[in-house]
Amino acid sequence: MEQQYEQIWSNCLSVIKDNLGHQSFKTWFEPIKPLSLVDNTLTIQVPSQFFYEWIEEHYINLLKKTIKKELGPSGSLEYSIVMENNGKKKKNTAVKMPTGNRSATKNRSVSMPYEVGGSHGIKNPFIIPGLKKVVVESQLNHNYSFQNFVEGECNRLARSAGYAVANKPGGTAFNPLLIYGGVGLGKTHLAHAIGLEIKESHPGKTILYVASEKFTQQFIDSVRNGTQNDFIHFYQMIDVLIIDDVQFFAGKEKTQDVFFHIFNHLHQSGKQLVLTADKAPVDIQGIEQRLLSRFKWGLSADLQAPDLETRIAILQKKMYTEGIELPEEVVEYLAYTITTNIRELEGALISLIAQASLNKKAVTLELAKQMIDKFVKNTAREVSIDYIQKVVCDYFDLPIELLKSKTRKREVVQARQIAMYFAKQMTKSSLANIGAHCGGKDHATVLHACKTVNNLIDTDKRFRGYVDDLQKKISVN
Image (cartoon, rainbow, N blue to C red; front, side, top):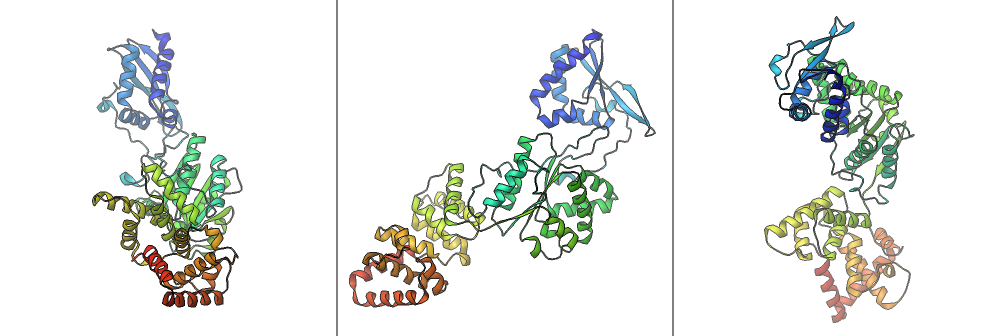
């Protein structure tokens, strides 16, 4: 039976491979060599004691089933561990260690250079003696994919650059890729999407997403524990490093210094860096100039507040994902009213659904108005000019393009003047801004429109009815 050991182990690997991810199989099972098969006991060689302990702890059940399947109920497994002799030569030491019996292990010290973040951080990113790869949990959120990222004018450059980086990490001019923008505009989503795409198309690469504050805390822990070199060594072995919110490095000189050296090493090694920040590099305060200059080496792409079409598309995407249906007028109301950021927009949608469900009410425009008033409080009490124009056009059954055109048709002029009137009443926009929204009119035209509407309210009963109806439709109070 001794000649069969290679075939037996090959059969075992086929089963193991079907039950493990590509990276786990490559890291933990490809380095193992079969040595012999004697008395129904298969002996395999593993690179280190730690390697043996890891396999026994994490893959014991899979190994037991596989060995029993190949060798029958009496089949067993022994390990030959490559021990280091004074750090110079290696020799094979056969140690009888029945699978699952960890007590049989000799308690030789095992070098585990660095565990990032402890039990609450990144799982098990040890640098394993005898292995070329680092085993790292990427910390990526699978909900934040490119498929779930709605593209619009506000984010097209950043998304396109992110996709280029994902297809050729370290091989484009976008290194580092710095994505910046205000709160809730999709920086973190896009950073995760890049990582997930690389993981899919380049499974051999080691990817790590880490928030800047977590990075700082890990560095502080390494200083306290005297493991700074291990901390640096670990990060220098990452193929794609994604750091979120680098502006929080501000004022932390030692953290900036260590990141500077990690950055240089990765960049010179052709590894990919993806960074996010709330401001452009030139506007970030408290970061050393030498680090800021490196942030500018690649591409800085901004994310802006989403336009109306993008906001509607985001809501529709979210509804599709969650399996929700809402009246079109409610979706449009949310999109017109919440203009600041995507996070607030999605939060309003979820709150509206929850409100309707808890109160056993249908989702109506009236409910949406009540919810928005409570949800956004001070930030969205003011309706937008766009929303006012939409309500007015719907009321008079006019295309919005016609209202913004230069036509002098009586019904269009009247609708335009009413829209200007409500915009002045309900928003803080300047007369010039209101005019710009209504087809490039000047502030004098807006003033004239407001006077005309006030006069007609006093003299024309039918016209006053229009204005009263529209007041109720537009008002969020």
